[in-house]
Length: 419
Image (cartoon, rainbow, N blue to C red):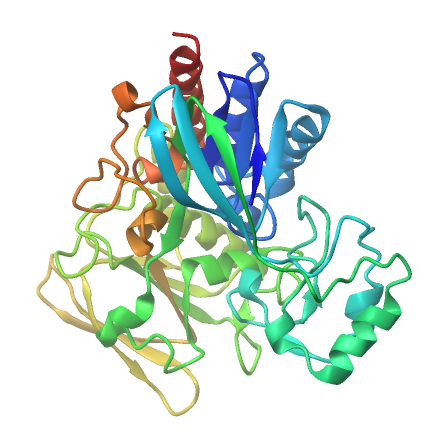
């Protein structure tokens, strides 16, 4: 174990998504030391997986590239990827935090040349693309990865694969003997920006996710629509790659349900309207069906909703989906009751998209210290204890709201550090 000393006003930011990046930069740019911790192999979080995001329908590069450059240029920020918080001791103004870093099996000599991946014979499911394609066991997490360094899934390497990746690297960057490392840092306050995880759709047995490749999630559609996604930007039915003639969006898949997530996940309606535009751009005549409880597009987004609802090939059914049945030809039939007409609807489509909810990531893992959390797993900020929350660790929110709450958390962290 090693000790990493910051200044007396150092701040720990847990989570390297758009919220954590914002909080880290806002804090560091006024002079505080920042430790930025991310559990995955690269920063960027869920935003990096999107095709476009609101309010300007920008690609992820629009917001992430400038933040990555600002972090590289700011010597006040120390970034730790593949790292988790294991323990927190002390109190506000003087926390001792134990960090654990998993082995990457690639050291800092890496130039991201890709020779190891080219030589590697072993493949794994591509987690970044939600398993819709494969990547090599030696891989760059995604094309915008920061830090831009490869990572190796050692458990998936054959003995031949291990030899191949070592022999292919001319920079001596492959180190398959790396071990777990721990260190202790001293900080004045902690910002929890641990983000969200798509709700597990297999928990909704009636929606049949996993039983047909014609049933996908809204995040899977984002990856398909992205130019760097598994289909190169083309929305097709996974498996047989059939072009879409009809598609159904199933709203509130897991949200607003006392058996799953009791809260509204805030972004799902807007995500569906956005994804309708993806479909319409590629398939001008495709039939689109949206099954919803109610539609929530507050403020300036009402205009966006009105345009999509005016689409003559789009049908909106106010009714919660009761079942999805799998058809022999590869399609599926979505079954619901129209709450307005009391009519039972059975609509056959090529592809069904589940608008799964946003589950706070901390609710799915062991919390390393005593935090105030509500019944849904969102972190309640405690300024007196210098335990703060930002983004979707605080509440379900869109990107704009996340960056606003992250700036607020950074301001509070700075105030705590200067008492």
